Each structure stands twice: as C-alpha cells, then as structure tokens.
Amino acid sequence: MLRQGTSRTKNRRSSSRAWAVLAAAGTLVLSGCGGGGGSKADPPPGATASAAPRVQLPRLDGEKLQVAAVWTGPEQANFEKVLKEFEKRTGATVAFVPAQDPIVTFLGTKIAGGQPPDVALLPQVGALTAAVKNKWVQPLGPEAKAQLDANYSDGWKELGSVAGTPYGVYYKAANKSLIWYNAKAFEAAGVKPPKTWKELLSVADTLSASGIPAVSVAGADGWTLTDWFENVYLSQAGPQKYDQLARHEIKWTDESVRQALTTLAELFGRKDFLAGGPSGALATEFPKSVTQVFTGGDRSAAAMVFEGDFVGVNIAQTEAKIGEDALVFPFPAVGAKPPVVSGGDVAVALKPSKGAQALLTFLASPDAAEIQARQGGFLSPNKAVSLAAYPNDIQRGIAKALIAAGDDFRFDMSDQAPAAFGGTPGAGQWKALQDFLANPSDVAGIQNRLEAEAAEAYGN
Image 1 (cartoon, rainbow, N blue to C red):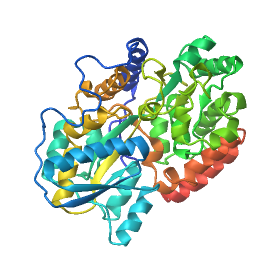
Image 2 (image 1 turned 135 degrees about the vertical axis):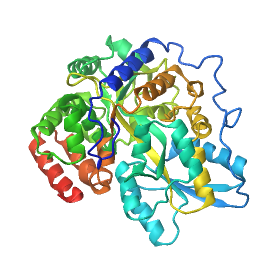
Image 3 (image 1 turned 180 degrees about the vertical axis):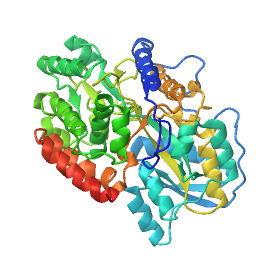
Image 4 (image 1 turned 90 degrees about the vertical axis):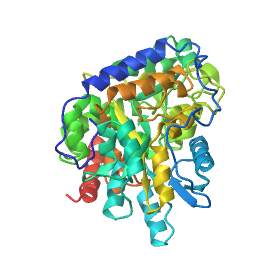
C-alpha cells in the first residue's frame, strides 16, 4: 500500500493485487500494441484541453503566479501547456521556475529571500513532510479538497497529507517498475522479454554476445540507481522488509540489503552488459540513457533501459515509435513476485493566495491531467482521467493498471527518506550507489556507508 515513511498504523497487507494487475498490463503492452498508435476515437495528440471543462475556476485577471518544479526539457514543455490552459481559463499569468535538487534546499533559499513561488511540485514524500514541518506550505482549500475527494483514492490522498491534514495534490505519478527495449535489437539477437531476474541475466548475456550491450544505465543521475535497488529489494526481500527499511527500522547493514546489492552486482558487475561499461554509465544522464537505446536500430548503444512510464517523453525525441520500435515489459521477478514501485510529484501552495489554491484545484482535476497525458510520457493517479487521453496502447495499459491497483503497491523508498539521504545529488544514497556502480564488489563497504548516512539523516 502507498504510505508515507512516518506512517506505522496503516494496513500492512502484501502488494499481490498490484503485482498481478501490473504484470497483466505488461502482457497487454506486449501483445496488444503492434500498431503503436491510438484508436480512431482518440483526441488529436496535439490537443491541449478537454472538449468540455469539468472544473470551474475563478477569474484571476491580472494575478501573477510562479510554479516551481525540477522538470526540464520536454517534461517542462508539456507541463507548460497545462499552465497555458490555466491562464486561458482564469486570466492569470503563470511563470514556470526551474528548481534544482534537493528541492527543499532550493525552496528554502527562495523563502529566505522573501520570493517563494506560489506553487511547487515536490518529487519526494520526505520533501512534503519537511516543507510542512518548516511551515512553508498552506493546507488545501475547500475547492481543491473537493477535487481530491472526487478523483483520488485514499492512498494518494494520504500521501499528500501530513498528520491528517491534506496539503498536496499528486498531479503526476510514475510506475518505476518497467524496462523498455529496442524491438529490433531483441529480434536480431533472438531473445524475448524475460520474466525473472535469472532470465534477464541470460538475455543480457545473449545480447552482449550478439554485439550490443544489454543495458543503458543513467549512472550520472543517482536517483535512477536508487530505483534499480528498490525494485530488486522489494521483489527479493518482500513488502514488509521494504517498509521497515524505508522507515529505517532495520539497518542498511541488514542481510536483506546485502542480498539485494549482491543480486544487483550480477548485472552491474558485467562490464560488457553496460553501455560504455561502468565509466560510461557513470557519465550518462537519464535523457541520454533513453535516447541512445532507440537511435540506430538494432545497433543502438544498448538494447534496454530501465525506468518509469515517463521514459516515453524521451523516446519521443527519437525516430522510434512506441509500440513498434520501443516496447516495454515489467521489471522481472527477483523473488516470488515482480516488484511494483511507484513515485509521484505532489503540488503544494506556498502562498495563502486565491491563485495558488485555484491552480491546485485545476491540477487535481482531470482537465489538467488529460492535457499532459496527450503529450505522452505522463501518468496520472487521477481516476477520473479518460484512458483515451493517453496517446498509445502502452501508456493506456500502464495507466489502466495504476488505477486498477488502487492503493495496493509501494511508494519509492528514497522519496520517503529525508532529502539528505534519499534526494541529494552527490550525497547519501545517490552517491553511495554511484560508487557501487563503479565497484560492485564492495557490497559491505557500501552497506556501512549507507547505514552511517541513514542514521544521521533519520536522527537515529
């Protein structure tokens, strides 16, 4: 179930339903999208608004708003289409402010300087908790709460709340348990999507022998490495251990962590499996990790890339077509079941203004999410969003599975942690796992580092 790192009293049942639903979605993706495009009934891909608005917004003529998020490139451009529609409906002027990780530090500097943005999208649960603790965030107003109650499951509402008070709207979600692959490279090597970790290693070996590295790893961005670890750990150690480690109730020196790192080293430790080897992976940022898989046909830089549904945004920067050249399968099972790890960005108001609350109301509505869904590479936890808004069968399948799973899956572990440990470039988990990628044989050393830094960040 989705839960904040501080929650200890919620239902602790396993994620079996989500596992089954998302695994089935993976099968749907592989078998049901030969054409890759949308149906004839789909809205035009370039559309920027619903035909009939479903949420009423106040007039805000002359009001100027700023919205901060860590998004860049196509993701930022697609979100700005949403902001343009908000401007059209309200008369307000909205400026996007690019933020840096950790966003809590970025916002702290803005607030200390007396210039906070009106709204921020926080990519970590821990960032929301810290922002509320610092008294930076305004509770949701009645209109935003009404949209939240109408359109979101209890788990997503809980994630946007602190101590029972709703502060945020999860505008964007992510299924972080997907591996995208170059269909031509798989065909040329004579391999099929694996269902287990053992099969993944076998496929990687065959791909490598055929002359193409198996995996493109975005080692320059430490957050992708935390996602690798979390998927292996959740599947191998199970949901209960995952929750305990997320809350630092067990130490990073625990045997379960050793097993997960040792398993991950089976992939990271094979230089021929990684595009550019370990040094090349450590120099590869996330956007390039995607585009180099889908440029060059069956002789691309690598055959696979791991990451969430948002990979579609970057695939769109190549000539590859999702559903034809670019396909996807669920992260393979390491233990008894495949993992399902989710993430998301929560929108919060930093100013007690009518405009900030109106924007949160809009972001909690299906109207806003459907605009960005049409652009591709976007997933909404809003259950009122029409599946027809997604541009292809792959993304429709992922979205349908997320909504069907309800609250029964696990939220990104590093996003639940204090930002100093789970969300800071060059520090904490990010840096430790980068060093692990460089030297996967040093499992004990990395465990000791992770535990020392976690103990400091969690205060225990």
